[in-house]
Length: 134
Image (cartoon, rainbow, N blue to C red):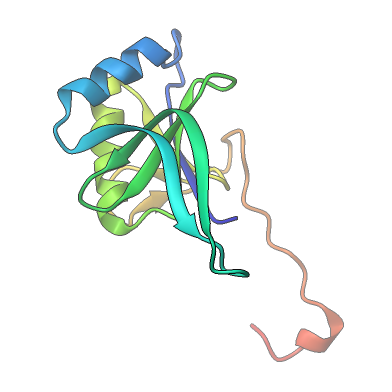
């Protein structure tokens, strides 16, 4: 698990799979991937996960996954360079980059929080033993 950023189009029509595939084919920084490989943190053994509708950002090895259920493109734990790439993709597709908590990214490390947006950041109350926190 990690923090996820999504590229979504707020207006109709939503991002379509064909549109995403065409974008990936025309972007020399992305490549289509159908399997992601890694090592288990527990056993150290090789793990291969099949993916559909995914692309790898060659410079960062970040994986962009297209969701046909939500018509959005997601990246988990993106680096700052990957966030910049996501913003470029979103601008080309007429979309936005939005975090899990509703923040919108319009430039590197510059999320904007909109209180009237669909998602609202909620401050959790301190627990009794966290009395020293501000």
